[in-house]
Image (cartoon, rainbow, N blue to C red; front, top):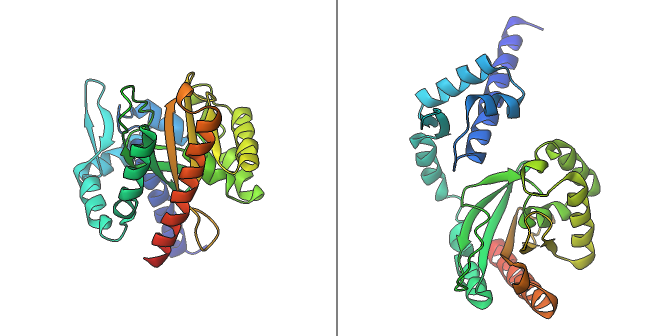
Length: 260
């Protein structure tokens, strides 16, 4: 390999590592990510992680605050998101749908998109039911399959791609309540039988969720709708009614997005 090729390979590796660490920061943006956590989750050595995160902070993509100097997304990350928003108006297009679903169910509705092997909540609408189940925050990044919307997206993929993503995420799944690879596989099997994803207290006790992938003309969904509520609100006939309502809204939304 020539010197120029070696430099190009090293440069690409540095970019991959920086982007990977930025994703880890985004995953923990609510509570912050410590240096030790970043090293453990990325598999990189602490000095390497520290060097990359320091550079990201210098460029405004990350920042440190708190007693433990945790890492959070920085001002530039926010500004870049605003700049990109004009080309990704999914939240705007889906807003009316989330509003209708939250009013019809009185529960919390989420809009989730896929980002590689992760899922990201990009919008949330709270219903009128007095006890709200806010299991996810807008902007929160999780391994695909760790939320009911993520299960819906995962279930829509080919067996080979599903298997690959489960292997990539298996070490991360246990961080979310009672979730494990075995539980995820059971949820996927159930989703493919029902035609929608169901989290029936599989992750958090007394919390149930329904997830429906938004169909696309290409065949592989990149976004999903979900409703999360206390278990007693999503059982029996009502669960089927809510699932049917969500599926109908997902099909309408698919037509709208195709028109865009």
